Length: 178
Image (cartoon, rainbow, N blue to C red; front, side):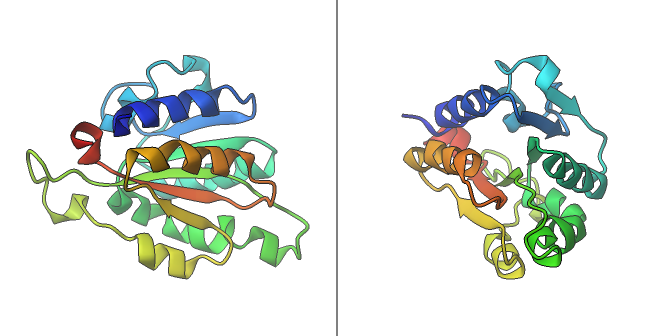
């Protein structure tokens, strides 16, 4: 099994659930390596957004509160940093702030930027997995280092019944290397 193929299979698996909706930059149009994993997903399930990461994370939380399972794509951790307030202070804390009255299950898909064959510079290749995990009290962060970890991570994120959100962290370099 190949890393990219497992990502594509995982997105098609998620798309089979009528509650899922995919949102972010370059989800309905080409533009990132993640875009290619969505090319067989029904275009009606893809919500293309402008570069407005904090708004995107707020929309993610709202859709999750409405009973959908948003799959919110941030191609690199460095981009998701712009939405961290919404992630840490809202999505992660809803169940705590409401004494369990509200649960918002979302799937956040992000990545550690590819350095090969061309290094895009340091503002695109951060790995903030440990830092974000330490800031979140309810969100689970799963970094998928091997192809065989990809599908189980997304399957767990979708089928979990505890109402928790999941961040799945991919490696850009592995799209073509593993």
